[in-house]
Image (cartoon, rainbow, N blue to C red; front, side, top):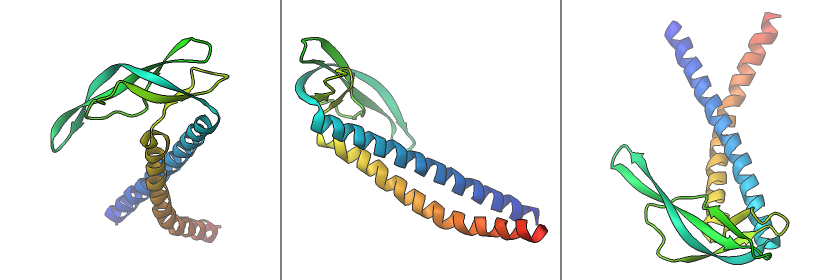
Length: 157
């Protein structure tokens, strides 16, 4: 009997964790897409130069570790002031180009994004899709749990 309760508790905990991560993913990706599209449509476009790269190692259980590269981009705003942007995403292959489009906020030129389809739209959209899948699956499992506890609570009164 104790094994069933422990297993049930672990399953409930797992579902709650998936639900929480899914909600966080939906909030993050929605905020990211709104910010990105805002800069894309209302921001100022300029050309940034890749001035360097951060590199670190990402460990994979199957293939060992992979060296990842994150671009450091310098761009100049409409006032002629230089700013530095660290790309949101890393890649296992360093980019082979020196210049990239950058969109920045005119009122706050330090707020900027690298202007590529994958960074502006694709990655946040994929995070949103996977988060929504996790959210729908966890809601599907959470609903019967709430019904069970609701019955248990009201039957004990």
